[in-house]
Length: 291
Image (cartoon, one colour):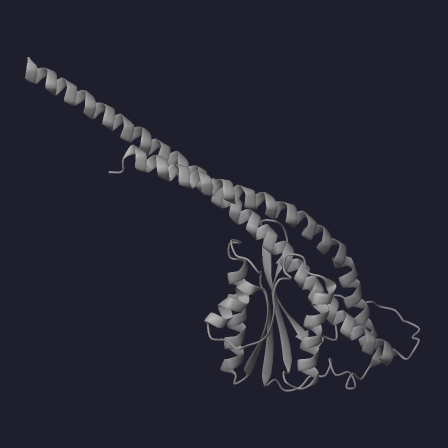
């Protein structure tokens, strides 16, 4: 049976851990508010960009001259997995990696090769541990992603697709719903869908435009921007989701630490009472022996 001193040491250790998790919860909450403000500001622009791109593509008619819209037989697939640079965020990173590996297995079962592009140290390290060959990884950007980060990822994905190195690009990330809820999303990034899909429903603008220059030139300029904005939105969604998941995980850890401290305190009181009772019995036994 543990002594009072052993239990007291463990209470001190758990209490120190609770201080750390509480501090991490507060930091994650502060970062979450900034990340949430950024994604809420971007969503209307990203939705509008998707709608305009889809409508212009529909007006062009034949899309065979747009390399990022051309569809071909799928022989190689690029999977972009958006994870975080740090852990202690519950199942945030594990869910993305698990789904990305499932997608890879599905394509390999059809005889297709898989190419990996990974955002975040956690995803990159996990995939390397699983002996996956990573074509490109992007680290150190997940806490506060910038638009040029999305441009770099979009340029690499577009390059792979235009050069014929891959025939499909899939993006896997966590969509931010609330601090308590993150929804795993899987979208086809390339070839760019002819109808923009945002959230759970397809949207399309009805009407006509006057194009200057030619509408095909406008579409050729719109598609790379659409690709960058889509990736940037996914980065911001993932960042907000990571901070929300970490805040929730640290809050749960703090609550569990408090419960454990209560249990240990009760055990310590019982141990102290047992020691007092034992001392009383020894005194009584000694007194009886002397009588």
